[in-house]
Length: 166
Image (tube, rainbow, N blue to C red; front, side, top):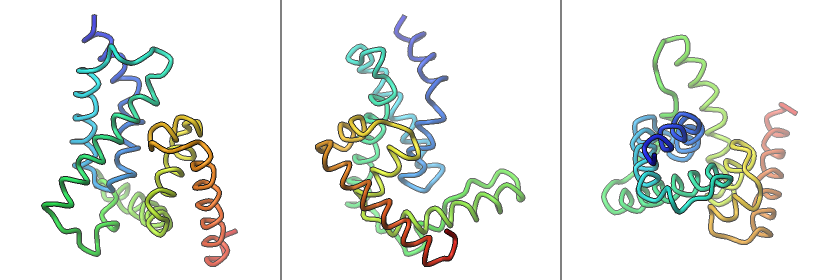
């Protein structure tokens, strides 16, 4: 029963979890590894989750896997200045060029935000989680999430005005 339930959850949420992790780490292979770790942890603790809270719970598990990865990586690997430039997955040349341009633009803007503001934007605006779910995932108060989102959105609007794209 547990394996069938996990299969169903995996099929339903794998793309969302992957996109979330990809937007955090900007690397296809790392996102895949973290996604596998997320669903492995989900398998171990699935009975602890309520049916109506699976998506936020999975995002919390994914976020924790990302934090663990980031802590481990900070102790063992230095990141180069081109870290945010390696964003697109190159399946076909045409897709790769288009995706790279889009990810470069999004990555450039998001990389200018502080880590906590970027997290809030990704969870709420990109992955449509509620403010409360984002607060739970980030381990902060609801009011703090609202402040982070306000500041991040304000900063994004300023960047658009600078670029003349508004």
